[in-house]
Image 1: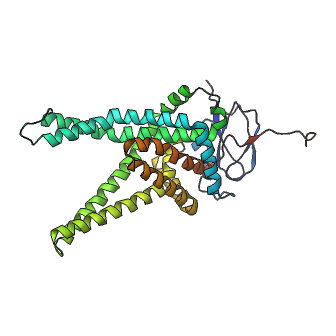
Image 2: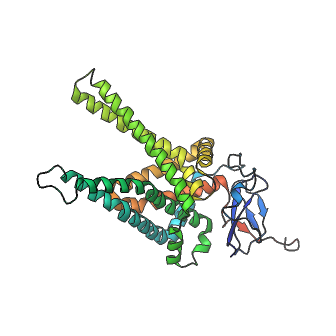
Image 3: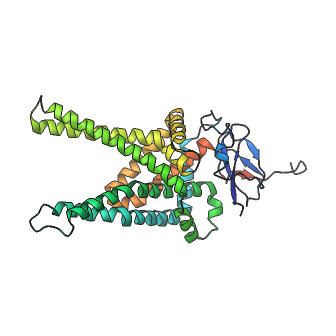
Length: 334
Protein backbone atom coordinates (compact mmCIF):
# COMPACT_ATOMS: atom_id res chain seq x y z
CA UNK A 1 0.00 0.00 0.00
CA UNK A 2 1.46 3.36 -1.09
CA UNK A 3 1.57 6.04 1.58
CA UNK A 4 -0.47 9.18 0.86
CA UNK A 5 2.44 11.41 1.88
CA UNK A 6 6.05 11.62 0.82
CA UNK A 7 9.04 13.86 1.36
CA UNK A 8 11.26 15.51 -1.19
CA UNK A 9 14.26 17.84 -1.09
CA UNK A 10 14.01 21.45 -2.24
CA UNK A 11 16.54 21.79 -5.10
CA UNK A 12 17.20 25.42 -4.18
CA UNK A 13 17.97 25.30 -0.44
CA UNK A 14 17.80 21.52 0.32
CA UNK A 15 15.07 21.87 2.92
CA UNK A 16 12.77 18.89 3.40
CA UNK A 17 9.25 19.26 2.02
CA UNK A 18 6.44 16.89 2.97
CA UNK A 19 3.67 16.64 0.38
CA UNK A 20 0.30 14.89 0.22
CA UNK A 21 -0.30 12.80 -2.92
CA UNK A 22 -4.01 13.62 -2.67
CA UNK A 23 -3.35 17.30 -3.38
CA UNK A 24 -4.54 18.70 -6.71
CA UNK A 25 -1.45 20.94 -6.78
CA UNK A 26 1.63 20.13 -8.78
CA UNK A 27 3.97 22.74 -7.29
CA UNK A 28 4.88 23.21 -3.65
CA UNK A 29 6.17 26.47 -2.19
CA UNK A 30 9.22 25.80 -0.04
CA UNK A 31 8.69 27.17 3.44
CA UNK A 32 12.40 27.79 3.88
CA UNK A 33 13.37 29.72 0.71
CA UNK A 34 9.92 30.46 -0.80
CA UNK A 35 10.90 28.88 -4.13
CA UNK A 36 8.52 26.89 -6.35
CA UNK A 37 9.24 23.16 -6.27
CA UNK A 38 7.67 20.78 -8.79
CA UNK A 39 6.94 17.33 -7.43
CA UNK A 40 5.91 13.95 -8.76
CA UNK A 41 3.09 12.22 -6.89
CA UNK A 42 4.48 8.83 -7.95
CA UNK A 43 7.62 9.43 -5.86
CA UNK A 44 8.59 6.46 -3.71
CA UNK A 45 10.16 8.61 -1.00
CA UNK A 46 8.35 8.23 2.30
CA UNK A 47 8.73 10.26 5.51
CA UNK A 48 11.19 7.62 6.70
CA UNK A 49 13.31 7.03 3.60
CA UNK A 50 14.11 10.56 2.49
CA UNK A 51 16.00 11.35 5.70
CA UNK A 52 19.20 9.59 4.65
CA UNK A 53 18.73 9.56 0.89
CA UNK A 54 21.09 12.45 0.20
CA UNK A 55 23.90 14.26 2.00
CA UNK A 56 22.22 17.48 0.83
CA UNK A 57 19.45 16.90 3.38
CA UNK A 58 21.10 19.30 5.82
CA UNK A 59 18.93 21.47 8.04
CA UNK A 60 21.91 23.58 9.01
CA UNK A 61 22.13 25.38 5.68
CA UNK A 62 21.42 29.11 5.61
CA UNK A 63 17.89 29.39 4.25
CA UNK A 64 16.92 32.58 2.48
CA UNK A 65 13.94 33.47 4.66
CA UNK A 66 14.11 34.15 8.39
CA UNK A 67 10.81 32.99 9.94
CA UNK A 68 8.81 35.80 11.54
CA UNK A 69 7.44 35.32 15.07
CA UNK A 70 4.19 37.17 14.40
CA UNK A 71 3.44 34.98 11.37
CA UNK A 72 4.05 31.86 13.45
CA UNK A 73 1.73 33.03 16.23
CA UNK A 74 -1.03 33.97 13.79
CA UNK A 75 -0.80 30.52 12.17
CA UNK A 76 -0.85 28.89 15.62
CA UNK A 77 -4.03 30.75 16.58
CA UNK A 78 -5.71 29.67 13.33
CA UNK A 79 -4.69 26.03 13.86
CA UNK A 80 -5.88 26.13 17.46
CA UNK A 81 -9.25 27.56 16.50
CA UNK A 82 -9.81 24.93 13.82
CA UNK A 83 -8.44 21.87 15.63
CA UNK A 84 -8.79 22.57 19.35
CA UNK A 85 -11.10 19.61 19.97
CA UNK A 86 -8.69 17.06 18.45
CA UNK A 87 -5.77 18.61 20.33
CA UNK A 88 -7.63 18.54 23.63
CA UNK A 89 -9.03 15.01 23.27
CA UNK A 90 -5.66 13.60 22.17
CA UNK A 91 -3.93 15.34 25.07
CA UNK A 92 -6.48 13.87 27.48
CA UNK A 93 -6.04 10.37 25.99
CA UNK A 94 -2.22 10.50 26.04
CA UNK A 95 -2.07 11.88 29.57
CA UNK A 96 -4.63 9.33 30.74
CA UNK A 97 -2.35 6.57 29.47
CA UNK A 98 0.54 8.17 31.36
CA UNK A 99 -1.52 8.49 34.54
CA UNK A 100 -2.72 4.86 34.46
CA UNK A 101 0.74 3.42 33.75
CA UNK A 102 2.92 5.86 35.72
CA UNK A 103 1.06 8.51 37.72
CA UNK A 104 -1.29 6.30 39.70
CA UNK A 105 1.31 3.56 40.49
CA UNK A 106 3.81 6.21 41.67
CA UNK A 107 1.16 7.75 43.93
CA UNK A 108 0.40 4.34 45.45
CA UNK A 109 4.10 3.58 45.89
CA UNK A 110 4.73 6.94 47.57
CA UNK A 111 1.92 6.26 50.03
CA UNK A 112 3.29 2.77 50.63
CA UNK A 113 6.80 4.04 51.38
CA UNK A 114 5.42 6.71 53.73
CA UNK A 115 3.46 4.08 55.69
CA UNK A 116 6.31 1.58 55.85
CA UNK A 117 7.86 2.94 59.04
CA UNK A 118 4.61 3.42 60.94
CA UNK A 119 3.43 1.14 63.70
CA UNK A 120 0.22 0.23 61.89
CA UNK A 121 2.32 -0.82 58.91
CA UNK A 122 1.08 -0.59 55.35
CA UNK A 123 -0.75 -2.60 52.76
CA UNK A 124 2.45 -3.27 50.79
CA UNK A 125 5.51 -5.15 51.99
CA UNK A 126 9.07 -3.91 51.54
CA UNK A 127 9.66 -6.40 48.73
CA UNK A 128 6.51 -5.30 46.89
CA UNK A 129 7.53 -1.66 47.23
CA UNK A 130 11.01 -2.33 45.88
CA UNK A 131 9.70 -4.35 42.93
CA UNK A 132 6.99 -1.81 42.21
CA UNK A 133 9.44 1.08 42.35
CA UNK A 134 11.81 -0.72 39.98
CA UNK A 135 9.03 -1.43 37.47
CA UNK A 136 7.77 2.16 37.66
CA UNK A 137 11.30 3.44 37.14
CA UNK A 138 11.77 1.23 34.08
CA UNK A 139 8.53 2.39 32.43
CA UNK A 140 8.72 6.05 33.50
CA UNK A 141 10.89 7.29 30.64
CA UNK A 142 9.38 5.28 27.74
CA UNK A 143 5.82 6.17 28.72
CA UNK A 144 6.74 9.83 29.24
CA UNK A 145 8.51 9.80 25.87
CA UNK A 146 5.39 8.32 24.25
CA UNK A 147 3.16 11.03 25.72
CA UNK A 148 5.49 13.77 24.49
CA UNK A 149 5.87 12.30 21.00
CA UNK A 150 2.09 11.92 20.56
CA UNK A 151 1.49 15.63 21.18
CA UNK A 152 4.42 16.74 19.01
CA UNK A 153 3.44 14.50 16.08
CA UNK A 154 -0.17 15.66 16.27
CA UNK A 155 0.95 19.31 16.25
CA UNK A 156 3.06 18.62 13.16
CA UNK A 157 0.14 16.84 11.51
CA UNK A 158 -2.16 19.78 12.13
CA UNK A 159 0.29 22.45 11.02
CA UNK A 160 1.20 20.52 7.86
CA UNK A 161 -2.21 19.24 6.81
CA UNK A 162 -4.71 21.50 8.56
CA UNK A 163 -7.00 21.95 5.56
CA UNK A 164 -7.03 18.22 4.75
CA UNK A 165 -7.62 17.17 8.36
CA UNK A 166 -10.78 19.27 8.65
CA UNK A 167 -12.55 16.78 6.42
CA UNK A 168 -11.36 13.71 8.31
CA UNK A 169 -13.09 11.89 11.14
CA UNK A 170 -11.93 13.14 14.58
CA UNK A 171 -11.84 9.71 16.28
CA UNK A 172 -9.64 8.38 13.49
CA UNK A 173 -7.33 11.39 13.88
CA UNK A 174 -6.96 10.67 17.58
CA UNK A 175 -6.31 6.97 17.00
CA UNK A 176 -3.71 7.75 14.33
CA UNK A 177 -2.02 10.25 16.66
CA UNK A 178 -1.73 7.61 19.38
CA UNK A 179 0.11 5.25 17.02
CA UNK A 180 3.82 5.96 17.37
CA UNK A 181 6.70 3.92 15.88
CA UNK A 182 8.66 2.09 18.55
CA UNK A 183 12.00 3.38 17.24
CA UNK A 184 10.89 6.99 17.79
CA UNK A 185 9.82 6.21 21.36
CA UNK A 186 13.22 4.69 22.07
CA UNK A 187 15.05 7.71 20.66
CA UNK A 188 12.95 10.06 22.77
CA UNK A 189 13.53 7.84 25.80
CA UNK A 190 17.27 8.28 25.30
CA UNK A 191 16.84 12.05 25.18
CA UNK A 192 14.78 12.08 28.39
CA UNK A 193 17.37 9.88 30.11
CA UNK A 194 20.09 12.32 29.10
CA UNK A 195 18.13 15.23 30.58
CA UNK A 196 17.39 13.28 33.77
CA UNK A 197 21.07 12.41 34.25
CA UNK A 198 22.02 16.04 33.74
CA UNK A 199 19.47 17.16 36.33
CA UNK A 200 20.67 14.50 38.78
CA UNK A 201 24.26 15.66 38.34
CA UNK A 202 23.19 19.28 38.90
CA UNK A 203 21.32 18.30 42.08
CA UNK A 204 24.44 16.50 43.30
CA UNK A 205 26.50 19.66 42.69
CA UNK A 206 23.92 21.65 44.66
CA UNK A 207 24.15 19.19 47.55
CA UNK A 208 27.93 19.45 47.59
CA UNK A 209 27.66 23.25 47.56
CA UNK A 210 25.25 23.14 50.52
CA UNK A 211 27.65 20.94 52.50
CA UNK A 212 30.54 23.30 51.74
CA UNK A 213 28.47 26.31 52.85
CA UNK A 214 27.74 24.63 56.17
CA UNK A 215 31.44 24.98 57.06
CA UNK A 216 31.41 28.76 56.68
CA UNK A 217 27.93 29.62 58.05
CA UNK A 218 25.31 28.12 60.35
CA UNK A 219 23.51 25.03 59.15
CA UNK A 220 20.05 26.59 58.71
CA UNK A 221 21.40 29.47 56.61
CA UNK A 222 23.52 27.07 54.56
CA UNK A 223 20.47 24.93 53.75
CA UNK A 224 18.46 28.01 52.79
CA UNK A 225 21.18 29.44 50.55
CA UNK A 226 21.98 26.06 49.03
CA UNK A 227 18.31 25.36 48.26
CA UNK A 228 17.88 28.79 46.67
CA UNK A 229 21.05 28.33 44.63
CA UNK A 230 19.96 24.87 43.46
CA UNK A 231 16.46 26.09 42.54
CA UNK A 232 17.77 28.98 40.45
CA UNK A 233 20.35 26.70 38.82
CA UNK A 234 17.76 24.05 37.93
CA UNK A 235 15.34 26.61 36.47
CA UNK A 236 18.15 28.13 34.42
CA UNK A 237 19.28 24.74 33.14
CA UNK A 238 15.68 23.79 32.36
CA UNK A 239 15.22 26.88 30.21
CA UNK A 240 18.61 26.39 28.54
CA UNK A 241 17.82 22.76 27.72
CA UNK A 242 14.40 23.68 26.37
CA UNK A 243 16.05 26.22 24.10
CA UNK A 244 18.78 23.89 22.85
CA UNK A 245 16.76 20.65 22.68
CA UNK A 246 13.20 21.53 21.64
CA UNK A 247 14.14 21.20 17.97
CA UNK A 248 15.73 17.86 18.84
CA UNK A 249 12.36 16.69 20.14
CA UNK A 250 10.75 17.64 16.83
CA UNK A 251 13.46 16.05 14.69
CA UNK A 252 13.03 12.79 16.59
CA UNK A 253 9.23 12.88 16.62
CA UNK A 254 9.19 13.72 12.90
CA UNK A 255 11.40 10.72 12.11
CA UNK A 256 14.07 12.94 10.58
CA UNK A 257 17.16 11.79 12.50
CA UNK A 258 18.58 9.55 15.19
CA UNK A 259 19.27 10.87 18.68
CA UNK A 260 22.82 12.17 18.17
CA UNK A 261 22.10 13.75 14.79
CA UNK A 262 18.89 15.30 16.09
CA UNK A 263 20.77 16.87 19.00
CA UNK A 264 23.41 18.28 16.66
CA UNK A 265 20.81 19.68 14.26
CA UNK A 266 18.60 21.02 17.04
CA UNK A 267 21.38 22.84 18.89
CA UNK A 268 22.77 24.20 15.64
CA UNK A 269 19.43 25.62 14.49
CA UNK A 270 18.65 27.04 17.94
CA UNK A 271 21.91 28.99 17.92
CA UNK A 272 21.53 30.02 14.27
CA UNK A 273 18.02 31.41 14.88
CA UNK A 274 18.64 32.63 18.42
CA UNK A 275 16.08 35.43 18.48
CA UNK A 276 13.24 33.31 17.12
CA UNK A 277 13.98 30.15 19.11
CA UNK A 278 14.39 32.03 22.41
CA UNK A 279 11.06 33.79 21.79
CA UNK A 280 9.27 30.51 21.02
CA UNK A 281 10.79 28.76 24.04
CA UNK A 282 9.84 31.69 26.28
CA UNK A 283 6.21 31.43 25.13
CA UNK A 284 6.25 27.68 25.73
CA UNK A 285 7.94 28.10 29.12
CA UNK A 286 5.33 30.63 30.29
CA UNK A 287 2.37 28.52 29.12
CA UNK A 288 3.81 25.29 30.53
CA UNK A 289 4.56 26.98 33.88
CA UNK A 290 1.02 28.36 34.01
CA UNK A 291 -0.31 24.87 33.33
CA UNK A 292 1.85 23.42 36.11
CA UNK A 293 0.45 25.98 38.55
CA UNK A 294 -3.04 24.76 37.66
CA UNK A 295 -1.97 21.23 38.62
CA UNK A 296 -2.24 18.26 36.26
CA UNK A 297 -5.43 19.40 34.49
CA UNK A 298 -3.76 22.67 33.57
CA UNK A 299 -0.87 20.86 31.87
CA UNK A 300 -3.31 18.82 29.79
CA UNK A 301 -4.82 22.07 28.50
CA UNK A 302 -1.73 24.23 28.04
CA UNK A 303 0.81 21.73 26.67
CA UNK A 304 -0.86 21.16 23.27
CA UNK A 305 -1.51 24.91 22.96
CA UNK A 306 2.13 25.70 23.73
CA UNK A 307 3.39 23.05 21.28
CA UNK A 308 1.66 24.52 18.20
CA UNK A 309 3.96 27.59 17.80
CA UNK A 310 6.99 25.31 18.22
CA UNK A 311 5.70 23.00 15.48
CA UNK A 312 5.17 25.89 13.07
CA UNK A 313 8.58 27.35 13.88
CA UNK A 314 10.17 23.95 13.27
CA UNK A 315 8.51 23.65 9.86
CA UNK A 316 9.42 27.20 8.86
CA UNK A 317 13.09 26.59 9.73
CA UNK A 318 13.46 23.13 8.18
CA UNK A 319 10.98 22.80 5.33
CA UNK A 320 7.62 23.60 3.85
CA UNK A 321 4.02 23.08 4.83
CA UNK A 322 1.63 21.12 2.66
CA UNK A 323 -0.96 23.92 2.63
CA UNK A 324 1.53 26.22 0.88
CA UNK A 325 1.01 24.70 -2.57
CA UNK A 326 -0.31 25.98 -5.84
CA UNK A 327 -1.37 24.61 -9.23
CA UNK A 328 0.74 25.23 -12.30
CA UNK A 329 -0.88 27.46 -14.88
CA UNK A 330 -0.39 27.22 -18.62
CA UNK A 331 1.20 30.09 -20.58
CA UNK A 332 -2.22 30.89 -22.05
CA UNK A 333 -3.67 31.36 -18.58
CA UNK A 334 -0.89 33.72 -17.59
